[in-house]
Image (cartoon, rainbow, N blue to C red; front, top):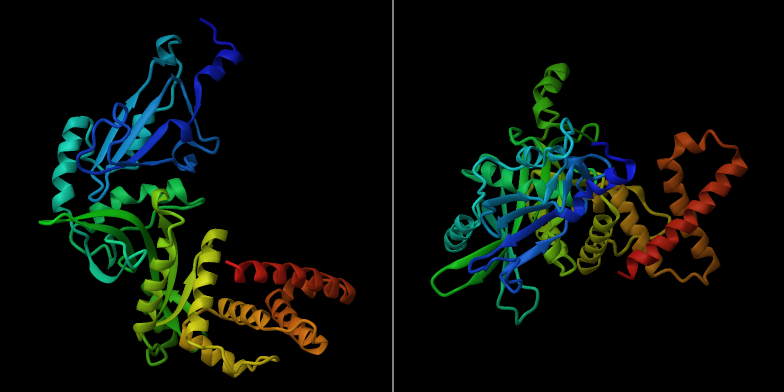
Length: 408
């Protein structure tokens, strides 16, 4: 049998379409026969980490991949079904090893019998409790009877490494370019957000999101940072340890609210709780973010601005900015230099009277000065007229974006 190019296409499917993810709660009936059952449907956004850059699966017709999780404990159920397989028609053809690929990303012990899975979900719903230290709780509204709790933990917490091995696949499916973190590195901290529902004799916890953070030593003598694992080597090179304040630069690496709970303010609640926790910790000297996407950058900007305004942190600052005063404010807020300057610039723009020609000019010069210092290596290769034009173009773009952020 020869399969034509047209026929080949019949055996290719989009992995995002056939991978069915669900968070299942107790008392859920079969989700295909009873769609009103208690579960949340999750549609994957990125499957290239599993099935390659084209996000395609080859060799099946009417393929269905069911990957279900208990909404709290994340106990896992996997089922792969299809109507036809290409190797049944064409000996030697190599269809995608769907089960093998999925198994690489979920821990052993997953279930393949749906009834057994539902029984486990029923049990775990009333017995599962979050791991780690509770650092905050909140409600979405004053009259909301559902409480959301935030816990901070690490891989030394009993049972958490196993829990994380079930949780981590979500970052590949929902964060573009994400990678798994090293579970053997003790410098990782993880914050988890759970929905808590009280049922009289027990509390039901459902996972709704989490954040991973990595701790670096903050070497204030040179305003740099090194991973904690390198500190001994650095100390030996310097032949001294007194320059180290045993301070930490904490970097947010992954930040995810699961799709059913997005656009409900959970991301801001998590960020605010973490930021308060960082501010209260005297060993944490600075907070940074690793390669944030646009959505997280907006969330961070909005909440940093709100904190600065509510606490009147930048009142008294005027243009031109006093470098020492800005640094004093930055240390108090524990923001990195770029984020601190951006926030100050946005708040200055918000109260700026643009009809005041001199004030507006001074503001533009202040922003362009920062842009020049940040991009000096590239700009120095341009002629003076090119530099002026480039800075003017960049400033216009930044001002527009500042107004957009201020309107969030």
